[in-house]
Length: 183
Image (cartoon, rainbow, N blue to C red):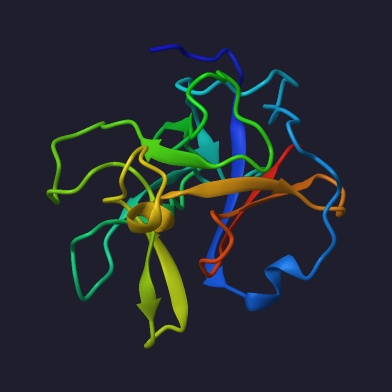
């Protein structure tokens, strides 16, 4: 497994879904690499830390109060780096994470499993009580297709300065919002 020397790949994660998330314009970013905080290309298979950004804690596993499983992707309240993640691409011939390409995201296993789930992220079914789509574990790595749509994400650049949008992919699934921010 490759590791990266990048200090941190910043992810600002919001667990709600807004249908208007794609009404904003996007720059032509096809095939551009995703860059880390040191302006290095983020490699598929590389271990990177996912944190909120300046003044926030890293991403980790959380448990909703009513059901302990599956675990949700959550932000820690402390200023630590959280649980590292690995990105994998639907294009196994390209070792770089690219904007607008289909990717899986998974936590590095760090402890015995509380839930019998995979560490791969996916968008869960709509939660009518909170009116949100939660990003949870138990996704499927690889095998892009109709049965695995909720396990695929895309990093998209917005016209807004310093913000990159991470959405579910392909785009005919409702969109959970995650933002990658380079400070």
